[in-house]
Length: 181
Image (cartoon, rainbow, N blue to C red; front, side, top):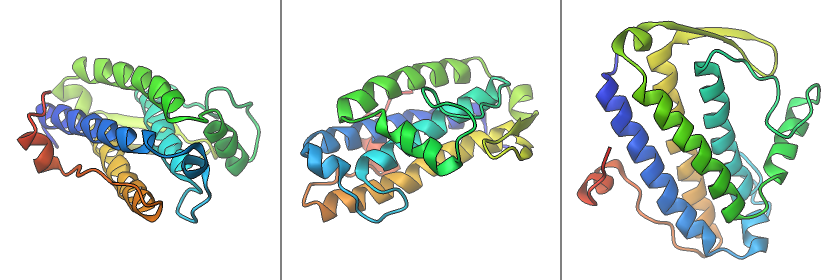
């Protein structure tokens, strides 16, 4: 099991890296931000909205809920349509940042209330497709940070393809820059 303080440090890094990347994305034109690029998710916006949505849905699961859709999207839609409607709510980097800041605050408050017994407990949830899953809580917490890192790599590649600068967001760079928990 990963120690609680390590998890908190990983989340501090996660948001440090996110903020640096959002700063770089703010320099994009609206057209560049929304341009279909053929990555896992169509655009820079869609990739960032996906990561933010994943953080939101996992936080809901950690709180004992299993949402069947994303906020602002009706239930019962096919999965891809749910994602499309979720992404479309965020037409600008500012809109993404505003929503994500609220999720971050809630997630950090959740982490602050955890203890080792909770980390070791089993998380059982039902995903949007209706399948039930069960994992130790600590593994899902690690998964969310790892997931964000994976997609930040994609965003870095998209930024470069768009001719924009991609910031250095390595974990050790964060510590050299004075990352605070």
